[in-house]
Image 1 (cartoon, rainbow, N blue to C red):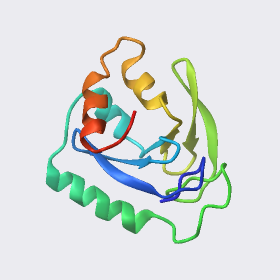
Image 2: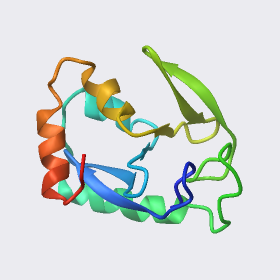
Image 3: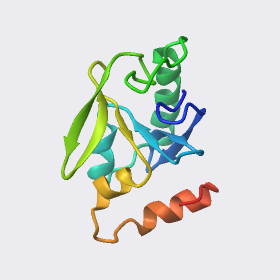
Length: 130
């Protein structure tokens, strides 16, 4: 999948059993519809579920290249600004996926409470700088 912000390739990372797409260049995240709720509930999935999710995502991704920042990197439909708490993120009108710029996913999940230490530690294990 191509990052809608910087047009670099995104890679899949598994966080608490949920497969997220992350851009190493601009450090943004794509979160498929429903995944944010799973992360917020603090419930992790099984490895088999993550593998099945990756396969399903590959089938669902459009073979067409991303044309502009207002198109979903997953299904190529329109994205629109959506309010999540005190921030605005982009959400696909079709698949309901969410695009988070650098730092927004952590803020959405943890606010300013400092509870994001496990998340940063996990990303560090993956070799991802935060």
